[in-house]
Length: 104
Image (spheres, helix red, strand yellow):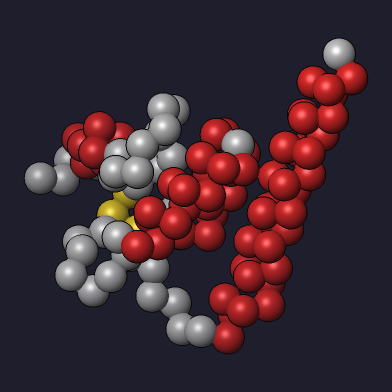
């Protein structure tokens, strides 16, 4: 029982550290750069959601994959954190959003 509790505490600690780093970026670094987000939610908010939903390790992988696919040649748009782990875009949520907004 003690090992399991220690393992959970270390995972929670890593999760809190990652969330703190992202919050630090949002408060101190992001305001210094012009807004250029291609996705909604922003990559930092996506990283926060992924870490909270999938844990520190998988959330960090998902957030990093999102940052890597954010470049001038991508269309962008609505891309929420999926319920299942994946490094690919959440196309189902995007299509549902477009349908509700009467977009093509």
